[in-house]
Each structure stands twice: as structure tokens, then as C-alpha cells.
Image 1 (tube, rainbow, N blue to C red):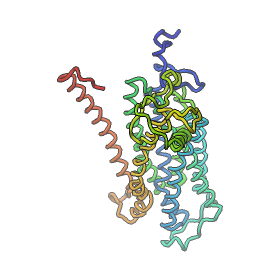
Image 2 (image 1 turned 30 degrees about the horizontal axis):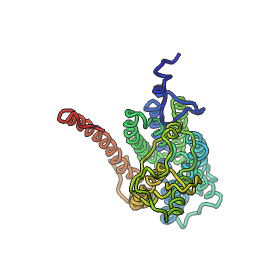
Image 3 (image 1 turned 90 degrees about the vertical axis):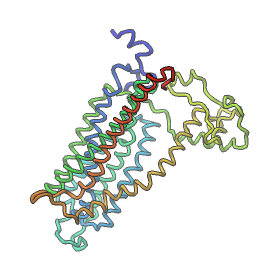
Image 4 (image 1 turned 135 degrees about the vertical axis):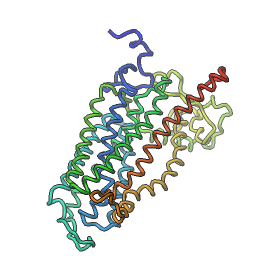
Length: 417
């Protein structure tokens, strides 16, 4: 029989998370690092699989499919761009319809099938053009339409599947920590650091071991190992299912944002009340039942506050709650951060295209029997990121502990939080 503490109110999570069958979950038996350990290990193998394909892709296109450097670089960046755009669709499906876990499992299956098809495409002789040692690849026999269709079809199926896994695996990890519990809320920050560490660790293995096998042993094994790695990662993730906390789909956040923007535009002529408490907001009981946070009104992006002006209408396209308005503001404030990533992302794209092609012209010999693969040059970027994550996580914790000690010794009455 469960103890009183476990079955009492404090024994269950308070953030609305449930088990796979929509039942409340006990804090002591689910979530936190007990569940996230499966997610972090999954990410190591999954990133190894993905980067095992993407890192050396331009060399396969030029050496095996006999494409020119410009065409190959263009194909790689087009595919990479698709990989990073598809998560918008995957996130929408998860939030509005299927939930994160089910969306993730369906997308993982799609990824595994795509990886299997890619492995066949680089292994079966009839699915690739014959070998050619000509320096000018234009003189080689080009890949047929069928061969290109199979290879690029598999690549873009992989991009489709990645759209369902990439946005949901990190949020599934975040769901394992209850924001209403101070200790778990603090642990969530550390989780994201170590989740990024797992990404870079898997990428490092791909840019060293996997690309070496592709260049020196064979593309069949070089693609087969990432496929096996992806299958292992899915099994690891599934093994942690009994420990996961889940969130039920609550509708599209894009619709909620559109509600606020349209309502604010329709009420733009109405004056804002001097007291924010006069704006429309739901009762605390409503948020308590939904296990959600209630956010107070702020003065930033003030014109959006007009969406919460009471007009006597309850239509969502004319009246929104203050919390809904503030949630929209938080998302809109992330747009400048998104814009700031455009230039770094443009430079990062070069590491998988022209950077690697340039590496083929360098003297990469170490001793008389070993040669560093061109794609392994990107490992230096990964190593720097690995070190940065560890230093950031450890430094932040040490700094916070010093702050606690300082306040305790010299100003014990000063509130820490």
C-alpha cells in the first residue's frame, strides 16, 4: 500500500504532467534524472547517427554520385535547411494533436526507415553510379534519375522524421521536472546543459570514428553503423517509458498567439485602463485545476494588452486573458534572438560543405600510416562546445553556491530568491 505522503497532494506532480494513460503521476517514481538518463543516452546515439550522415554528406555527393562542388554544397544546405524547418510542423502536431511522446515515436520510426533506405542506397551497386577516378567529375557517368530519387528521397524522409524528433525530445526532457517544485525547477537548468553535452558527445564520435570508417573502410558500414546506432537509441528511449511524465496536447500555440494579435488589433482604439487588474484574467482556481502558471500584466509590448480589455464579448478573437497575452509577448521577444542566429547559422553551414571540401586539399597525414578524414576537421568545433558546456554548468553552480554562502555569512536576513 502506498504511504500517506505518496498518495497525498504533495506526492503527485503539480504541473499537469500525467502518465501515458493520462493518470496523475507520483513525483518519487517518475521524472527527474531517473527518466532523463534515458533521454540523455538516447541523444548521444541519435546525434551520432544524424551527424554520421550529415557531416560527410558532401564527400559522398562528390565522390560517389559525381556531383560538382557547387551542386553538392547546394544540395547539402537545402537538405540541412529542411531539417531545421520541419520541427515547426513536428512541434505543432505534438502540441495540438498527438502529444510529444506519440509524435516522437512515429517520427523515430520514420527516421529509422529512412536511415535503412540510405544504407541500401550506398550499398547496392544498382542504386549508385559506377566508380570513377577522374579528377573532373563531369567526365564521369552521372547518377540516374532513379538513383538520385532513391538517395535524396531517403534524405528528405529523414528530414521529415527529424522534424518530429528534434523539437520533442528536449521538451520531453523538460517535462520531467516540475516547475512547481523548487528543487526540480533548479535541476531543469542543469538538464539542458547536459542534454547539449550529449549532443556534442555524439557528434564528436560521428565526426571522428564514423567518418573515418566511411573514408577508409566503406560507405556501407559507414552508413550501417549510424542506422544501428539510431535503432539502439530508440530502444533506449522506449526502455525509459515507465518513468516518463507526459503533457496532454492543449491546442496549437500559434492559434493562441493569433487570438491575442487579432484581439489587440480589433481593440486598438479602446483606451487601456490605468489599473492592470481591470484587464480580463481567469480565476486562480482555473489555473490551479489546469496546473498552469498565472502571469501578471507587464508594460512591455503594451499594445498587446488591449487584447485583454473587457468589451462584454467572450469570443477568443476579441477577448484574451492577461496570461495568454503575456505568453504571446514572451514568444515575440524571442524573435530578435532568432534573428541573431541567422549569421552564425550561415557560417556554421560552411563547416559541412566548403570547409570539408577545403580539408581534402590539406596535408592531413599523421605519421606514415594514418590520415585524418577531411570531415574530422569539424571535430574541433565540437570539442570547443563540449568544453564550453562543462565549464558553463560547473561555473554557474559554483558561482551560485558562493552567492548563497556570502549572503548567509554577511546578510542572513537578505532573501536569496
